[in-house]
Image (cartoon, rainbow, N blue to C red; front, side):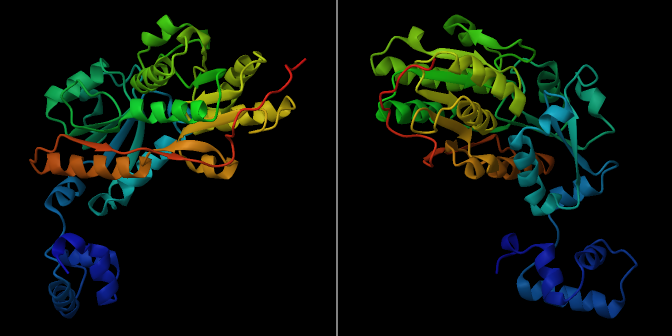
Length: 356
């Protein structure tokens, strides 16, 4: 077995000792006997393990021993977003960061520059930050190890992401293939501090949130290619990532009796839209089809058709790039694939009477 496939945990299991004991052996800590030390080395040699990753060890031995995950929303709001939790799960799964603390931080008024993060964390993962946010620009020239997930992609930082636009195209293609021609789009957030509500196409094009802007562009491209007038699409900005915000936006969409399909930019909001529809006496998918985006755990629980993106793998890739940069490497980006997951929330459109 090659050393790149063997972890400290594997050595500990094979040697019949704790992972902490193996760590003590390789860090020359005086907490193990000489016999135990020789035993661990012998097992490690047999497995082909040559020692902990230098970048991970360097990070753990730093004065903080923490990686910061920086989000735009408040920490409380970020914890409502499954993508944040899954991203952090992926980061934590990378073996060389297993003993490193993860710190969730909000890029509010107190964190505008890289200096504000010094002493708090040793490396940074930015999650879905606006392209021109001052922190992104500062980190790109500060020398502080940092990786962007989803956005920004123009600041010079290495990044991990998906083709948001192609995933959204597949959303809209799916509804059109099912015969839907009256479609509403439920956007989680177009601007950092937007007010929400119905938005025009021109307003949507000026969105500062990259994911929303790219996904809407994908929807509009497919709609136009099908020969339909984009002004026929009903777009609502929820101005929040939580269930309540999604439900309020869904109410606005469903006030139009003609809507037969809803495209949501997140699974949280897709689930909220399906629930609101049922509360109004509509059957999903017989009366209304709903499709989400992300394939977060709630999608499977709610039986949602959705676009799968590998969010946990995004976290792993971000962590690996971060470790590579700490070690002096030059990895710049990772682009991951999306795919359509069909469940029970979408079906062929059928004629129905307007709701009274």
